[in-house]
Amino acid sequence: MNKETILVVDDEKEIRDFITIYLRNEGYEVLQARDGEEGLELLKTNEVHLILLDIMMPKIDGIHMCMKVREIAEMPIIMLSAKTQDMDKILGLTTGADDYVTKPFNPLELIARIKSQLRRFTKMSGGFEKNENEIEIGDIQINVSTHEVKVGGKQKNLTPREFSILELLARNRGIVFSADQIYERVWNEQAFQSDNTVMVHIRKIREKIEENPRKPRYIKTVWGVGYKIEKDS
Image 1 (cartoon, one colour):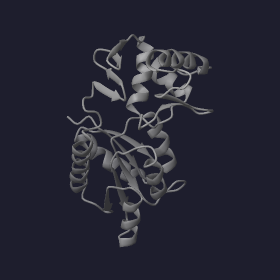
Image 2 (image 1 turned 90 degrees about the vertical axis):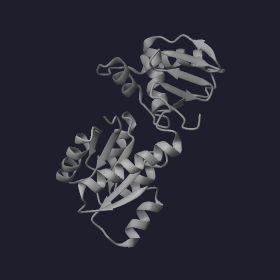
Image 3 (image 1 turned 180 degrees about the vertical axis):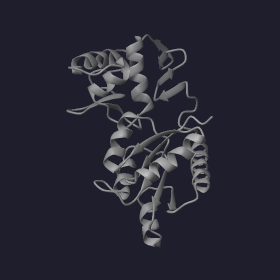
Image 4 (image 1 turned 45 degrees about the vertical axis):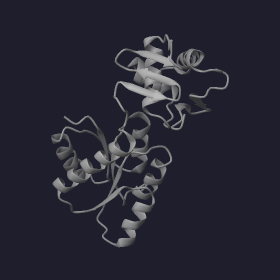
């Protein structure tokens, strides 16, 4: 059973639903977005392994979404378009797409392209994580199955909530999470004046994993927005 999550971004609901049926039959998790703006919002709060991205959409089109995604993430992107001109294909590929499929398409061919891109990405990068239960960032080793965190080989004792926040940011490097988003993902309840609660937990995590908590190397504050761990930490 596949565990990867695929984001389908297309302004036509019938196409999104059509693709979703085939993807779920293959065991993939599927997220849907109606345009690039909605797609980028979903990327902020979800771990996505591949994007199917239509070119012609309102608000933020596929080309501009692709460019924005490439600023924060490296997952495969397959462009979808009814256009057949070579320039459209070249534009899509030069803005960061990995493949290009012209509508109408054979769903079985699309699935084959998706599997090919996921295999290629896994082979080139060593996977989305070398082991789903183990995450390494610089000197930090996070073992999800045992809830252990080591920094430079030394054990650090994090509370369950501290661990969950660190895991969320570590699995989504480069993505900024607001205090409300962190609270809702970790506490599993609607956020209400959660800024101070999350800030206190972030401070405690930094005290445990950062050499200098006042100048953190790992958990960065994006002022007025939230927190993130840089992709190249």
